Length: 64
Image (tube, rainbow, N blue to C red; front, top):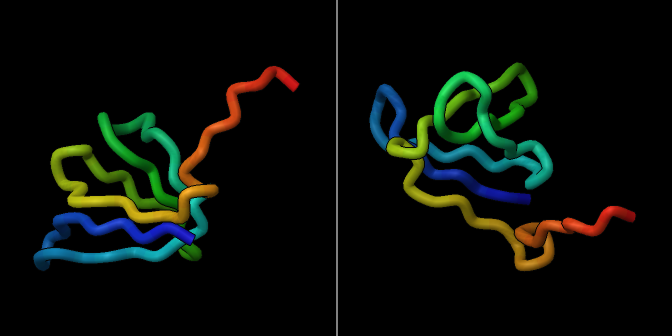
């Protein structure tokens, strides 16, 4: 699981989602987060932090 803190319209907000649900956004220069009821697109300038476990934060670049 990953927790994302960001500046929302009503102040600071947090979302906890599966780390695999966080990707680069195609709409804004930032993050796309898949929620249960849709997506949220966050510009990098509104993201305070993303916390996840060490294993979830690793990327596998092998061509398998």
